[in-house]
Image (cartoon, rainbow, N blue to C red; front, side, top):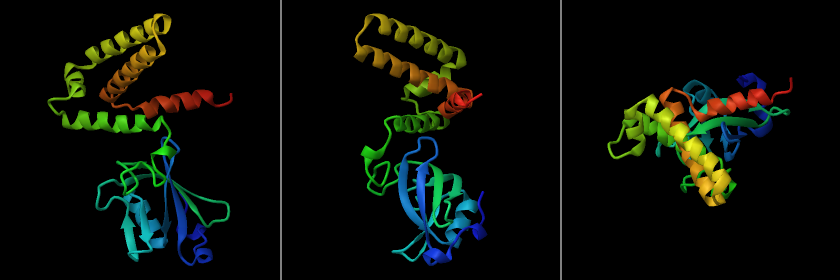
Length: 203
């Protein structure tokens, strides 16, 4: 992790731009500005904090809405005068309700998997009675594993004998039930992605 001393605060009159990127998806979420105090608070609280030029004070993203940015890492550019902040958004980043400050069009289609992962995690914690996901968790790992097996077979059959629409529908069912099964084992889709990333490294 970088230190306060490594940053060229004077070049930008005490404020440097901080580009926030989704830690899992790579989507650029927003741009803010940090002073030394905001940088330090971000590291200490693990919630991304800026210096608000309009309010003239420190401002933690989501302090009113609850849609905080949970810090993953901070990198400094080659000139020492801008930051790349990787974070996990807890809800929409933009105050207008979109995932990024440039609108939904900037989001990766795969970004929805992150939102779905968060929803499944919420269902796991809260267990609302009317939820199908709650029912799956209540039935246990054996039933969830069975559902993944059933959906896998249906995907294979759809690939051989059905339309593209049916195939994508069955694939969606498979991915959803797999994500639920992973959560029941205290794992996430991101853990699977990490395995794929490691396998892709040159040997």
